[in-house]
Length: 300
Image 1 (cartoon, one colour):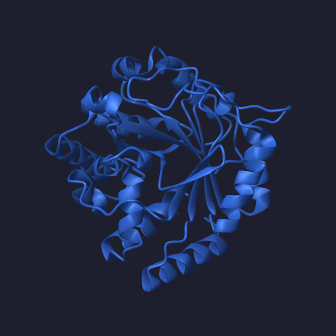
Image 2 (tube, one colour):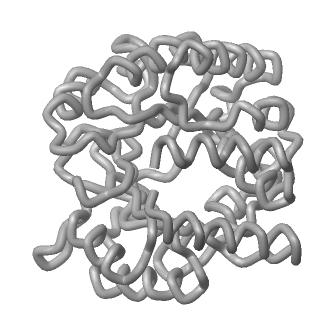
């Protein structure tokens, strides 16, 4: 991370904590809900099949920037499917950097060639070993790993949503992140139980088991891009929601924190580690602050 970016984020954090501000710093633009996969845990793919136009996305990026967002994510659907009038995901990342966003990330299922060195991080969904990943996402594991090996940069972060299907594969994914070229880290979430996928949610005891495994792997040098200090809060959903410092924009609609906020009661069952980490950070939790400094300076 550049020193200028670190100073900017430090000032934002201090003002947010001291003055209880609710200004956003993290923003996500949904490019499309089109996806080439039908994953068992996903509730947001292929609903409208709309590919949002380039000009609209640029307006949404400008809106987020003017709101104060400086960490930008591009999400789908599948982001590498997005195109409009000759523009692709790479063009959006370049434009975001030019616009002034300090960190620009993209989320992908990894089934397309990974040639995006302009992104700070590519969060690539990998949901277990070959057998369990394929059970969640279809027969895609070998294609994904081939694309990872052939990627043009080492900015990949595995992104695992832990659920009832793959909960025993956390250790293997940690080892894979540690030993695979082009992979910088692995980031975990627990399954957030949208009504049509509630059966995949973990119990508090299962979450505690997974956190113990993750913590043990961190101790052994696995590059985990999560905060160990937040685990106790995540296990029992004892963190404040929503996260006012995060916003999502989709087809012109801005949502605080994420699309989950529209589903009654779902915020209280949130499985997103980063939501817990950010809400605790901006409430001034000292352990979280120190842990985040160590982690973010290491992986970004």
